[in-house]
Every structure is written in C-alpha cells, then in structure tokens.
Amino acid sequence: MARGGFSSRFPVRDTAPARALAKNVKRLREARDLSQDELADQVGVQTPAISHLENRRGNPTLITLEKLAEALGVPFTDLFRSR
Image 1: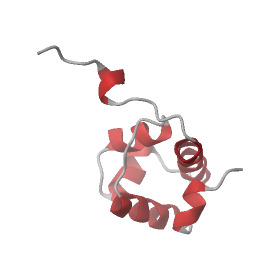
Image 2 (image 1 turned 60 degrees about the vertical axis):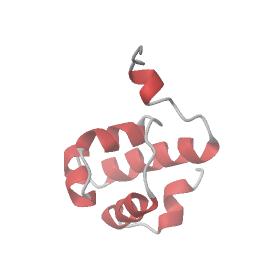
Image 3 (image 1 turned 90 degrees about the vertical axis):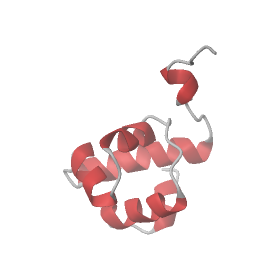
Image 4 (image 1 turned 180 degrees about the vertical axis):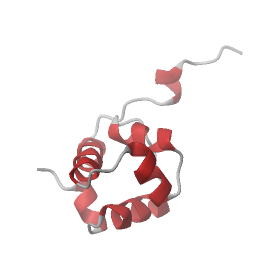
C-alpha cells in the first residue's frame, strides 16, 4: 500500500472557520510573545499541533480548543472570529 505524503495526511482546511482559527491562534500567540513550544506546553499538546493549527492543517479536539482559548486568555468563540 502506498503511503501518502505530508499534504495528504495533513490537508489544508480551506473553510472560513479554519482560516479564522489559524489566523487568530497565531495573532494571539504572537501578541502574548509566546513561542509555539511555549503555547504547546500550556495547552498540553506537542509543538507540531500548534504549527498545524496555524497552517490550517490541524484537526483539534474540542478539549484542545478549550485549553487553547484558556492559554491565550480569550473566550472560546474568539478563536473563530473573523477580523
């Protein structure tokens, strides 16, 4: 069986919520002067999970999104707000 490459295992999610989530996570993380490593530690995920989110390749669980909002100090819904 052939194995897919990175892009087939982690496809870009081109939806409005995915775009908003990616943009907001990166913006909020940078505004708080956090590295991806630091945010990942606070959320309890591995660093690539944060990178995948910021590049619209992630598929986070609801629990991860709740922890992400808490770590970034914003309401859950702010993660998906279009700006």
